[in-house]
Length: 336
Image (tube, rainbow, N blue to C red; front, side, top):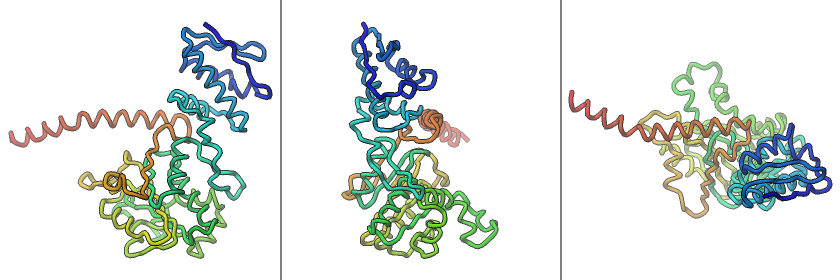
């Protein structure tokens, strides 16, 4: 069976089809439908009406994105297709309609996936938000952008960015410079996000005025932070005690965002990740949101999604095998 699909007036065919018709190839791959170009229309052929309807929906979503002025790169096309497979309309989700803030270059910062949009809404509506997910999902960048927007709107008086320097371990004392010089390399991702949104000069001015603090987590002990937007990055590397200490620094008029990736824990094996523990303990607490981002929310090179998924599959296989090794280890101990 087949169906005619008309391309709307004003739609650039080259953008819709992609370079060398790569977008049509993606649709063919997920729907098993054959798509033939004819003048100002397409002929969609498939063995089932369901496959034809699916291909038509994806094409319509792609045209909607073009109408909205979006660029159909590989990542965007694949994300629209993945949403369609879940029965979610990219156009109706209005992912790209929400502007978080504008960079110093005038570029609007917007959530790029449904997961990011839910994360942004949670930060707006909740006092404490946990953003948990793999690298490249925009956890830290979005949190920094939201903090800057809150400061510009006079919702807070101070922005505090904290990060555990666990990667440095006992080697911190051997690094050159004073304490700030020693820890700055481990805080670099936070500086990068600040510079990208505010511009380097503006960010440094606010830092000199102590409106913005970028500090190691240890600096948070003993403080009460009122009217502040507080971000804890790489929280998977906090201990249970450190996480409790950090969360209880929150004062009146403050907002807290905690970000981390539970698959990248650098703590010793005998230490429980404070992030994993907090997500378990605080799930369901009023005014606390736990946002779980996935490989589908990765906004880096498309290959990063595949790398993350491959490592997740590998980790799952190891978890299955792990109990067997422990049992064997106990057996050998008793035998000796």
